[in-house]
Image (cartoon, rainbow, N blue to C red; front, side, top):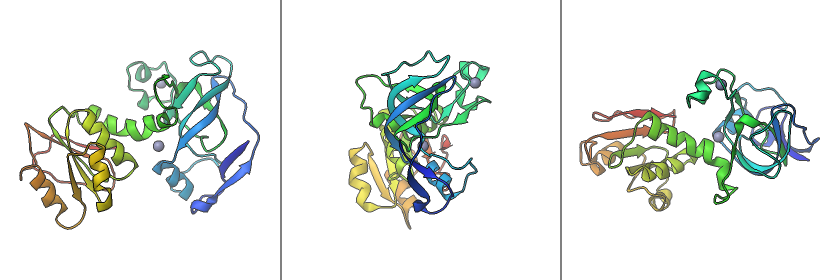
Length: 256
Ligand SMILES: [Zn+2]
Ligand SMILES: [Zn+2]
């Protein structure tokens, strides 16, 4: 099968298209024919050597596809199932996993292998894709969409009618953060460095857009009535770890 293999970290050309053996699933694993795989900032960090991973590696953790074969002990999926991955496989039975806090499972392991025609994945990283959902779009649900959902709904406790500021709104996380904020009923202020993205962000649900640069924070205050508040409280979400904002009495700052 064909796979994009990272042999040595470096510039984008460091990933080589190669012919490799199709992997076989071991116990607890599943062979998936890859339909789609998102390209994530995490992949770029791996490719650039910013994270230490075993090499050679086939990157790609935002995977959707069709189950081809299951290894011993796998019962949650069968061949033919449409599936998408979470970023992590977990043990599935520890106190963290059974309480809905599986991201803190001590046995969690990151998903790899999506930049290939087939990937062997741990069964506990797989979610079944309902027939009404597009199989390609679901590849990014867990990472790109789930990160914003975790930040806004779980961490920040965003409620309908509150205002949320999404910085880096034109990026991979920001685009979904805007949509998640709107879906949660919030008033979304989108901060973007590219004025050409403003119309698109409004189409995705942003109620206000602000272009980053000198005066941007003042503009944010103006679109929120000069105080940073438009309703009983204001929640500020910061979906990039490189950016920080001091806001008047923010309800929460969620960083993902
Ligand atoms: Zn990702
Ligand atoms: Zn666990």
